[in-house]
Length: 269
Image 1: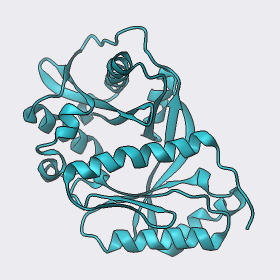
Image 2 (image 1 turned 90 degrees about the vertical axis):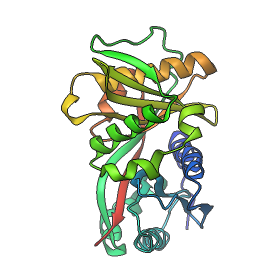
Image 3 (image 1 turned 45 degrees about the vertical axis):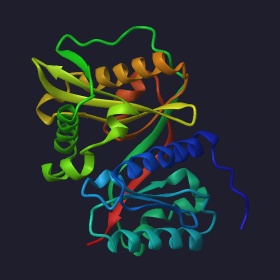
Image 4 (image 1 turned 90 degrees about the horizontal axis):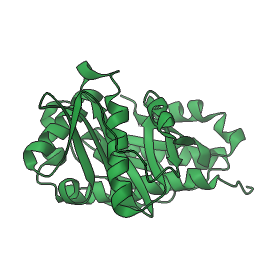
């Protein structure tokens, strides 16, 4: 075994996930948050799939270490009732071992659901308050607004609407501890975004747009809005987030850069 130096920005991206997801899981009051030898368990055991997460947190420098992490992840997911994801940070794997990642993941019983990126940039504060000719921005402070926020995310990500209540009901985290906003078009919520303070960064989370309103610049506008408000309020410089491959170009236009590659795995059927 030899030393492998992981890029500092990639490590920060992992830590941002574990910090914020611990808050999200504890907000639901179920499940568990614990470090299980290279696997951080951030699992709310909740019907909303994103609140059930595992992630690798240490460098993997040999195939056996990688196999162990992936097999343990597959077993954990399979032994729980609700859908969840292993957020696997490729940059924590030594490059020669990384070449075999698809084969090892398949052997471990994992299917690749989608891919994405950790992103970051010292872009705050935003100087110009964001606006969009179609949208009015409203901060989420009520249960009714929280339900609208959750519904847009479920529709955007293809989750059943039945997961809204267990995933978001009676949340003090979303209404009091985050900069969560709705974008309204003619009074109807069509886009969502939030930011939360995490380890000296402003972490952007759950950006989503109703499927029938995509490709109108709403995601860009709501992201800028939460960054503007959070940056103005906190004085922080660095913004961070995790994006799907499709969403990454939106955030690159705002000034964020890709700092880590992420594979999202589920357990094979």
